[in-house]
Amino acid sequence: MGKVPFAAIGKAIANNATDGFVKCIIDADTHLILGVTVVGAHASDIISEAALAIEMCAEALDVGLTIHPHPTLGESIMEAAKAALGEAIHVVNR
Image (cartoon, rainbow, N blue to C red; front, side, top):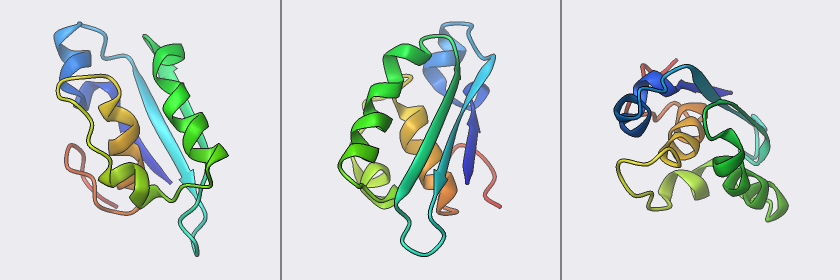
């Protein structure tokens, strides 16, 4: 599982909307994305990428390697996927 607070995402900071987070749950063996939770401002705008990733049986690495413009709230999906793999760049890895 990888969890990233909006407070670590540049666009959320710029929008003064740092309350919230993205959590990505992956299968420990296959790294398939099993679920994503988004809580906070514009959650309904950024959850679509996670829904597509689940529908396509994407692995966390697939989302992590996808280019995400900066600064955007969409980066939080990528960052949570990378955090689930222990490869986050904006938060401390577990």
